[in-house]
Length: 238
Image 1 (tube, rainbow, N blue to C red):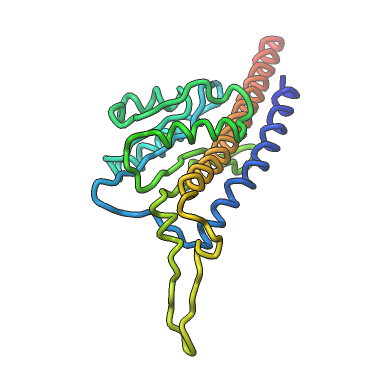
Image 2: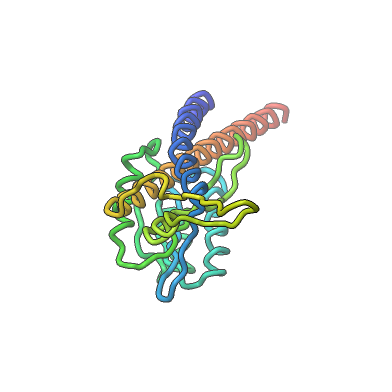
């Protein structure tokens, strides 16, 4: 069983590495463009919690839920989308009215970009006017540890605002920093860019969370095997 679990973890880590290319590339683009979440009256924040349907992996889901609740306590009017039944069940006890959308069947296999795209499509159909989408997921630190983190997915307004030329005075002349304008993005495709970037971030979050879950489950199985072996040794000696 340990060999099977280790094989699954290797596959999950490989998928996680591939997903990071998508997510980190999007982050680099928006960082270079100095994209910031917009603020405005009537605009809300959407929190996407990336959990799964599977258990037997320690406190990985409860840790994610606790981190989500801390963030929700700071912004009580935040809406929620939950991926996976584990965190949905936990958040429903305290924040049921804020849950706008949930997805079941998450975590059955290694996440794909097609999965993330389908989820991003459904999120885009929500009627709320969100200035910011925050994706909460478990970041894979190593085979023994993980931590809940947040990645930002920007609205069309935020992306459009970052396309403006910034002019900063310097010693000799005005320094012009061309943010998104340097990428020659047409206004008509901003919606597609936003949804694509959201899918990138979701793919990254789902793949990282899946690797954390497989690792936690393997560690739990390993500990259970060790405890069983100790019990058998004690029984034989007695």
